[in-house]
Length: 153
Image 1 (spheres, rainbow, N blue to C red):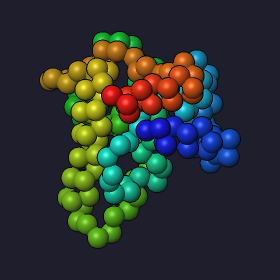
Image 2 (cartoon, one colour):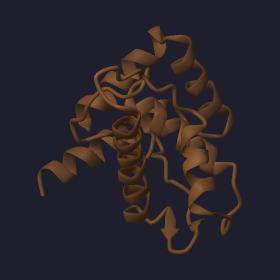
Image 3 (cartoon, rainbow, N blue to C red):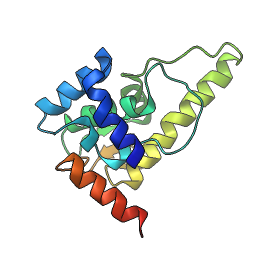
Image 4 (cartoon, rainbow, N blue to C red):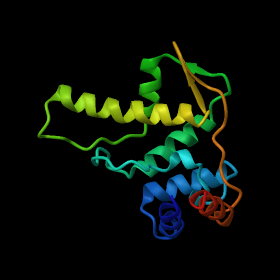
């Protein structure tokens, strides 16, 4: 996460339009730079490239979408997966059947749902409910210090 945070801090200045839009949106919502994003935005599990954007970009866009929702807001499971799919531009997977593609994509969305639940942002039962806002760090330096402290534990 330390490496991703440093890379994100550098990339924003030379960013592609999508990353620049996310940085602008985060700033307008009262956050510092994208490098101060919540830890749950970081993708720490190696996986296939399934999206046109990086997993970190997609995760940040989901977090920014969730921040616009009211606490206690709920979604049916199909509505939840629709919300997660709103900002995804899936890559084609020509070597897989349509059923396999759906399974792989669903698995990625389900894993991130689980991470959001473990972070205490959502609760998953018969519905998915937002129970807490994602926590951004106060500054790039504060986040790096926190990550270094975690690495030493």
